[in-house]
Length: 191
Image (cartoon, rainbow, N blue to C red):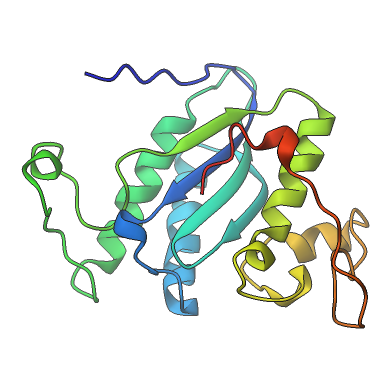
């Protein structure tokens, strides 16, 4: 049996990756993204935390969450998010059935992968790399050619804060492709 151990850092900042079951493109339309937003809002009212950055792609999500001082339980929040979102879509193009004995035993539906990945962000350099990764991810997956074109991302929030120029990593104006390197965070980035 696997022994999964999560980082336990009260008040920590965490990079999270959550993937749909069998890479189903559940978030290919805005209605599902809105259901996800409502589920996240509900989780935040029950157990507050800050969403530092986020990107929603058709088959997976990346977040950077900052937890309150004294609180390290991101697992409970992820679990609750999965439950609330699943409940919101069951009967609307998704089922609550499990496709294996193991998934039935763990009372899992066919919406999410069982596990999720997390990494505790240790310093500003890691935070900057994770922010860049999240905001460039739609380009990496070929969904858009520039980060500003993807609407299911925190990129525009960071542009408004002055942390990114609107044309960051942009190729719209015949600019060369950016030379972004994510090797320093590759060991904990899961797609």
